[in-house]
Image 1 (cartoon, rainbow, N blue to C red):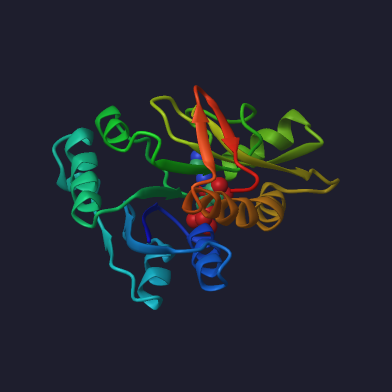
Image 2 (image 1 turned 90 degrees about the vertical axis):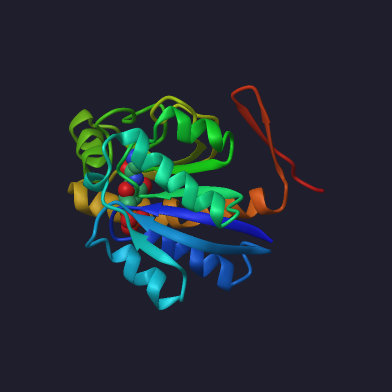
Length: 210
Ligand code: GAR
């Protein structure tokens, strides 16, 4: 059984897609064992509650340093014997010590086709605002492993989504979620749970048939 710990900051629609994926059997042999938010009012916590999943708000202000905060997250996940950490709309960049403790065991979803519109300062709606002001005709979403950079880790899955005339950042965000994020995140976790992901340097190889 793959045990997942999820980090959230907002609405948690990706968390929901993962929970639906587990329920429908799209993600086999997997359980979400912890959901932690850095924001008290994150609706994602409510979703966890509805599924009886242990969840908590951890306030960064209660910790002296970012490193201390991240260690508290790591300690909790270690205590729950978490195998894979899933960032689902988590707005903080994780410190080096955290990433090193879970090397190649942290996944993130980013709402663009990396390496476009990613890195420091690009999160949530800002990503879609940037895509629209650049004038790209295609955008999408990327699931990747987290390394020491921001949005630089090995790419697992990507899906393209068209930009349409009249799009606002909100409309585009919704289309990217529906057509890409909510599909590729459960799929990437399923591949991981099935042992079908191999990392070769910075390249991810998906094993088609076991
Ligand atoms: C999603 O669009 C996710 O891709 C994005 O935040 C949103 C969270 O929505 N993540 C980032 O921008 C990370 N850099 P959700 O809380 O409904 O899943």
